[in-house]
Length: 157
Length: 122
Length: 335
Image (cartoon, rainbow over all chains, first blue to last red; front, side, top):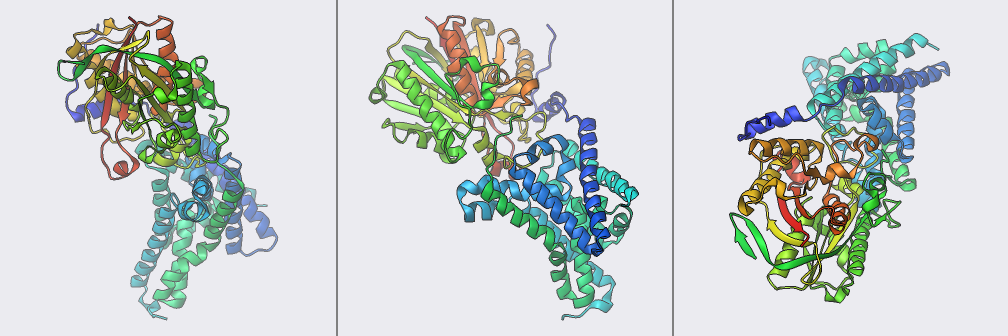
């Protein structure tokens, strides 16, 4: 019978647990994330090219791409399919705008049982709320820093 | 159709997602934190003018990931700042990202009306 | 009841487990344990509007089934001890609100079922009651909603995560009956080894299970070989591995007769449940199904069940607190 040294301190236990806990299959995960994420972006680019061919301005083309991908994501989420894609692709479907849309649609569906105002309305941003908070706040800070370096734009109105 | 551009979008978009995947697997950050990290990074890179180069190179490969969303916010803030001063810094960001935010909220609401969550069979 | 050693008790009066019942959900039905369950429900909503209502129905129906199988009338039940994972134990209290039985809500996270069995045995042994009902439930969807993410969110589960069992188990304890009998109990104390990863519950709870296990052996003077089988609540694959190692390091070899309810519940490869099952319903349904039926058929005559619980919630975890664990042991024997 082989002998194991008793583990007493919390640090030793944490170390021991880290050894015991299997790691995520990172190569497989990254491969799936790469091709699914790439594919979503490529689909976006195809939509972009089509819009451009029809003579839509570049900024609007990008907006249409976002809206359509958000629509697809919301649609697949409501069909209970997106979570399966997400489980397979991980960051591949999370990082593109599809993940942002999914993070808004999924709590909206989940909390419907608590009513349309305090359920759907209030819980919609449980996951995506921080994205807006930090995205918007950092954009304002970036703007203000830009202003410091480009004083000619200073005016209040 | 510009097939080369589509290929570039595929590769660059894929690489950005792989960075996210490494963060998920190695740091055990929750999805919300990953998204926040990406949107903030995008906003900073956008403010520095670096992200624009990536968009010129890869198109949707750079705009579709959430870093592109962050870039859009800070780009909008800077552009409207040039027009309206400090007030612009507050107005511009959300204005430029309005389509994405509104679409997500609206489609989310519709989805909650018509659909019900189901258990993951697998 | 006689206290032995530090925290174990030997029953002086017979406490018989007259009957049990368990009802589980669709995923559990696909698992290797499906033949032992009384009823498998095809739909996780079970005809209800919300998962919380469905979970109440699981506990309500399994209690009714256990009582009717036991042949004891509902009005002859003196107390009911029951609990679950939802905030303020709503599935148990809502499930029992029409039963007209004096009710104690119990919370011990995933250890709730054995905790209520211990309390039930104590009241019977102490002559406070003749018949006691013990139950616990959990539901994958309501637990995910409360503790983790919305069901439709496309996220990946780390390999150490466990799958909350959808199901409920109930048992009827009585002064009169032919057994199997509750013979000894070791209520556990809170053990915190400062594990913070909420996706690795097995590792957080294993030290508590070890503490209770070793204390039980020292207090009662029994050895691992005394038991035909030792079961832990829901440590999962990782926790099971850790407990086997740790008890070996303390000089107790449990390798031969030890298993874990979370490991037994699902087929790890086919069902993609990572480290195994968890939740109050896990040990409740495995005990009420697999373990109890094996005791009745005398395949097991001496069983030790140690249910483990992680005493945390999402607020404590967001505030950076570690995860305290608890484990309660109950020894059940045929006479």
